[in-house]
Amino acid sequence: MQRTTSRRIVAFDTSFLIEMSKSKDSLTRRKIDHIIDSLIKDRAAIIIPAPVYAEFFVKPNEVKNEIYELLSKSSALEIRPFDTLCGKILSQKLSLILNKKQAEDNIKNRIKFDWMIGCIAHVNKAQEIFACDKHLQNICDHFSMKFINLVDMPDPAIGKQIPLLEGVPLASRFS
Image: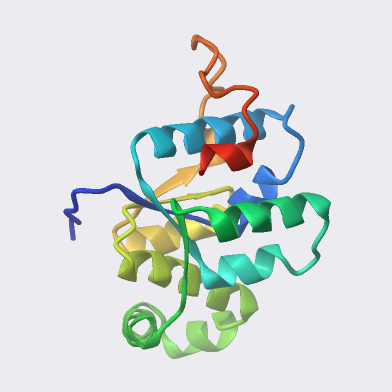
């Protein structure tokens, strides 16, 4: 199923936000900064599924509090709920792909959250999910979404000029 929409819509997984909260000097953080700059430049809509939001803020700290402020004030980012449509679609999807034994073995917290994240992104017409969690790749395949693994992305600094927004605080990029 190919999605057609005039605006690029992406979703972030918990692993993306966790990496976003780490040191600015890490390769993964440089990749994230590059992705965010590109998404903002493209005026993409960024979805944060509510379960991602909940998982990320389980243990708040100063950096997470800054990210919370960013998320709550940004017009580019939207927290999206797991609503009745998500529930209906997810139950149909899982009943098609899981046999009874798999359902009993796999319907644990992890699969619930990951499938909810994938379903929320799907219902909100996301074309891709950015994550570091390979388990989510299978779920993206079931919802015909592109999975972008931060670990597999090239270093944006190699062969690139210094980005115009380098040195600009992350929070001010979303304003």
